[in-house]
Length: 277
Image 1 (cartoon, rainbow, N blue to C red):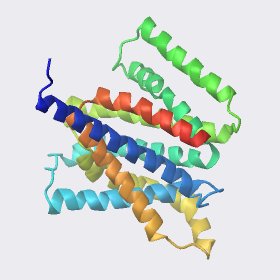
Image 2 (image 1 turned 90 degrees about the vertical axis):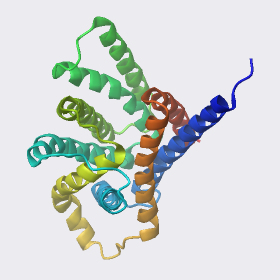
Image 3 (image 1 turned 180 degrees about the vertical axis):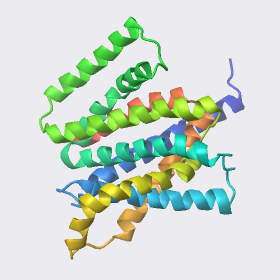
Image 4 (image 1 turned 45 degrees about the vertical axis):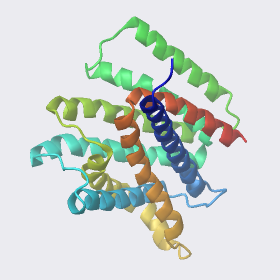
């Protein structure tokens, strides 16, 4: 039976969206590792890097929403913003801070293995907040995943306790953020795509990150007379981070969230193989 041209075109476009997302996700992860690792670019300031990303994404999202009107802003009251977006922004800032910090201490491949605990964390927190029902079969699957990650951690040649702690904290904060999005936003009928998410949440993250930055990293940067902001490195890095958010929107919008999850497995294989090589 002949396949219609429309079906072929749809398949080709779907694979193109997947390839773009994998490439950008791969690029951002490896680029962040390159900047933060002491043996590479040697700029071990994860809070500063995250703040640069948030400032860039906030500015570009504002231009796209308010100037070019690429997407419509969501109708949101001040009370809703303070009670819903602010807690989500706080958790997102912590997740990004700890996740980027882990790149200083752990390999890319090991971090990807630890991220496999995300479904376990999301399910556990969902049960805790009574958004998920407890099921013995599901919990058995979660335990299996946890055991697999434990085996990977046991066999890790460059195991670093502090790095693992940072990554596990990042997973916990990210999982809590995802559950809160479901509770605080989706329950109110508010849906944010990546552009409007950055428009509302990125400035909030920037404010929250400025507090630990002033305490932890600003004194070191102030006393480091040799420091200068490399606009080529940090500009392209921030552009990749923003493009990744758009790629997520494109992939999920044109295919499905399931396609993105399946493509994520392929991305993890590539990252682990690249890191190992």
